Image (cartoon, rainbow, N blue to C red; front, side):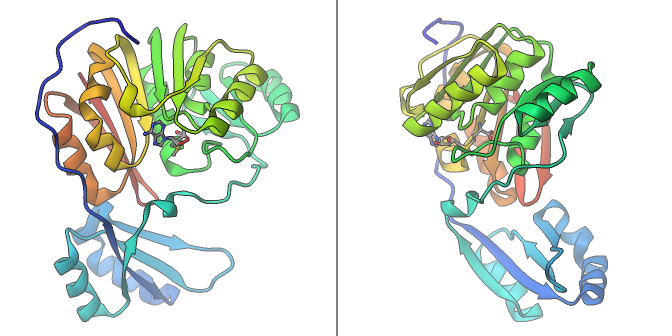
Amino acid sequence: MSEKCGRGAGRAPRLPGPVLVWRKWFAPLAAEVWTAAWGARFGSRMIVTEEAHRSAVRVDVYPGGRGAAERLKSRFGGRVLRLGADVWWRPQEPRAMPLRIGRKLLVVATAAQAASWARRDRGRAVVWVPAGPAFGTGQHATTRMCLRALAEAWPFRSMLDAGCGSGILAIASAKLGAEGVEAFDSDASAVREARENIRRNGVRVAVRRMDLAALGRGCFDVVAANILSGPLVSHARALRGAVRPGGRLILSGIRPNQSAEVIRAFAGCRLLARRGSEGWVCLVLGR
Ligand SMILES: C[S@@+](CC[C@H](N)C(=O)[O-])C[C@H]1O[C@@H](n2cnc3c(N)ncnc32)[C@H](O)[C@@H]1O
């Protein structure tokens, strides 16, 4: 990661503020009526969640600021919540069904599933990541969107997984066929778990404990960072400097109302794709 392949630029960007969400629970029919009337206005800023164990439907809107959130509350009721970073962490259950990422990747949770799907679906690379304390089984929308962006970026030779958690993105890249795959995480237990998952999957990935703040210049074809928007913005220059000109950055862990700020922080990169799912955004930028 010390190889030079370009010059960094830009001034220190402003960090994103807190994430505000207006939330209201509706009866199912009322939710349909409300979303039919207002869905087009809020677009990807609105997330509708139906949970199997509840009869109510949750509508979340990520507004432009506190004023907009309060206006929604005074007009429609509901609550304005200020989300902290901990909303990221959710329990991760083992999955019964494999997760299919396009035509190239399959993510499973057990050794038995890995063996069975490797026989049944020879066209897809099978990634085996059991549920563990480190983030990244493929259940979270951010991981899924990053996996999809990696599959779309294929073919590439080298890849850096910044904030690797379970190592799922690095492992998927190596399984696709990339040869120079590196990964790091600031959390020692995540690094241990990533090493174990790399061994399980029989791939070569160099993984180490490191903070994003220590990231040096690099020449990677692809750099993926599924970290919250705060670190993405404050370390934008370093992340951009780790990608070769013409390479790609895959960024997630971003709320819909934070994506413009993240794009601004990566000034000089081209926006290739912006996708959203379950209240999260994934950006693909070309350097
Ligand atoms: C949401 S998880 C992503 C895991 C995996 N890459 C995925 O996409 O599922 C974010 C990871 O980034 C790590 N992380 C957060 N801030 C970091 C930093 N400043 N430097 C290095 N790693 C960091 C966390 O420990 C965590 O494992």
